[in-house]
Image (tube, rainbow, N blue to C red; front, side, top):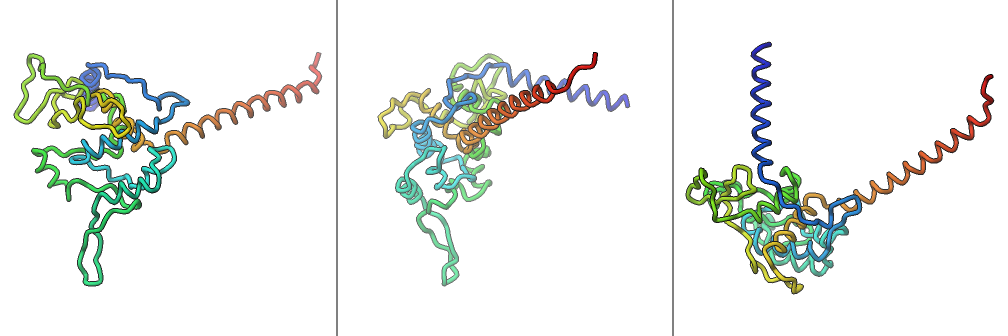
Length: 258
């Protein structure tokens, strides 16, 4: 029993130390349009976010749970059917076998999953110095702090490394990353993309747009879920009022005993 208690105490101390390390630097908190009970995605921001993913992130990070047709679904970027077809056709998918028993390449269709930048995990590690670029499909939900954390990491690169922290070759300092060390070079700067809608492409705007897109990818039914939740609250409120009225009406018929 004493040994079990000692183990529990060590685990609690270790957990608390990890939490304190994670929360040492307060995360940046932009004003997300999708926050709050009535929050919803900004369609233009989601479309810009996809452009950022395509031009900046897709060379290393996969989004294996998304299909190109999802880009046209209600509640998301809502590209038109023609736009979705055009987006998908820019990529090639291995298909087959054909009648001769051979695999072949064809243009992607809206029903296809997003093309992975690497054929397998080992190839991804070799291309990135041993580090595996995480899949971005549910990245926002998989990280403590969610959208704020991912945004903070994108904005957290600095060349001013605090004393006591030594960086190995190919490792960069990031004030918001757990452990403050990251192998991914700074991916976003002012002008990293040229927005097709004319929006000024500052580092803050680019980071905010791509994080909004990643949030939608992780929670594609967020708006519908909030609408359903609101309807449920209204329904329960009406039901509560009706129950209260019926209770009063029933008890008014009963004469109190003197």
